[in-house]
Image (cartoon, rainbow, N blue to C red; front, side, top):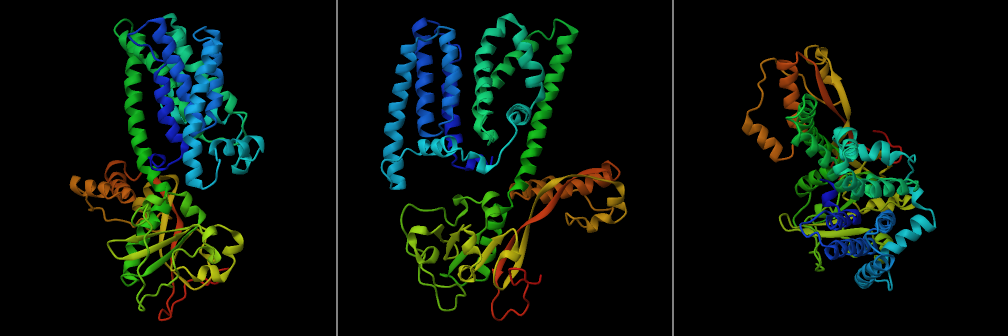
Amino acid sequence: MYYASRSLPNFFAFGLVTIAFGKLLPTLQSSSASHTTRRKTFLALLTTTGVIFRSELALLLIPRTLHFLLRRELSLSQIISSGILGFLIGISLTVPIDSLLWQRFPLWPEFSAFSYNILHSQSSNWGTSPWHFYLTSALPRLLFNPLAYILCIPLSFTQPALRCAVADLVVPNLAFVLLYSLQPHKEWRFIIYVIPPLLTAAALGANWIWTRRAKTLTNRLLALVLVVSVAGSFAASTLMLAVSRLNYPGADALHRLHALAPTHHAPGAMVHVHMDTLACMTGITRFLQLPPPSPVLLLPPSPPSSSSSPATPPEEGQNGDPSTSSSSSSSNATTNLFYIYDKSENETQLLDPLFWARFDWVLAESPERVIGRWLVVDTVDSYEGLRVVRPSDFFGGSSSSSSSGRRDVDDDEKFPGGGAMWEMARKGHVKGLMDAVERYGGRRVTGGWWVRVAMEPRIRILRRERDDEAVVVGMGMGGDW
């Protein structure tokens, strides 16, 4: 769900690659000409997508092209012509548009990325993983239901009627995964394209079991196991979706900051916000700005003299140089506050007191690194892991001092009604909902045993201390806390 809101090229490419894979599925039109046209369309569409969005798709084209040649489904001339067509379409779209957006001509972004990551071998700067990461970690987690790769796909290969179709779906895509495993830097989003065809192959095996469930006792048992696994996978993925929401404290922190800022600034004030690296990596996107960025350049209103915010013009970037600014601005129509967001991560700047002097609010993982006089007005927790809760945690009073901050509750505390639970879910209060379920379930159902979603403090919301506020919470750079 998080990546659905992120404009990463992998997920633009994912939709187009899935459409391209659809051209390889059997159709009612079984003529040779239709068969050839669909495969040529697949090659052209995949090439266009690779040129525009992700150059890694060339690795997916290599095994698929060899597959077409070995199966004599396309000739070499047909493959070359389809590739050239897709390349010309992609390059004619990406170079003019991206050159205009980046104000550099000519610019082919995917070639720049390919040059940086492959030709200059810089991808390892983002971290490395063992060669088997995709096979032993990423693919099992993406396929999710273990029966897909333990039972269904292997079974499909054992059935003569399915073997050819399954080989078309599985072999070239696994070859792509193996080729990509040679790259030191690995992320599951790099191989997301192979999941639809692999699940299609698993579905063929599952369908074979289901349609023959009445024939033998083994098939009936396997069919029952499949039904249970699908239901279990759905329940587990729903739970993981709720828990994964707790992995993005940065977004939660920015929402809370937007709720707090109007109580500390006069209408029309400019509010300068710095967001550190962890905050930006855990949910903050441009979509969370108030309002979302507009294509029209809006000049902020002049802040009144009563505002505590410095009247720094929004076009003034880092060190007064607009060309080096990493900030973005937006005005809030509801409170008439003009927000200026900054995501600077230059270590030299972060050690300069003058850099921090222009901010009113800071979202920081480590408040001691923020220079100046600041108040910690709120702390946002994030998911730490699962912890087994024993009866002593409920009935011995230890839960009141647990790291997750849960208070001990009376034995007569009732489980919230359906309306209250729905309201918490609707408002996104996942932690509160889980707390309520734990309090009732741990006390009333399991006798004190439970699996707790443990939380840990991650993002602090800091507000600049005003002169009339006597309590100093932090001085920054090693100050007392």
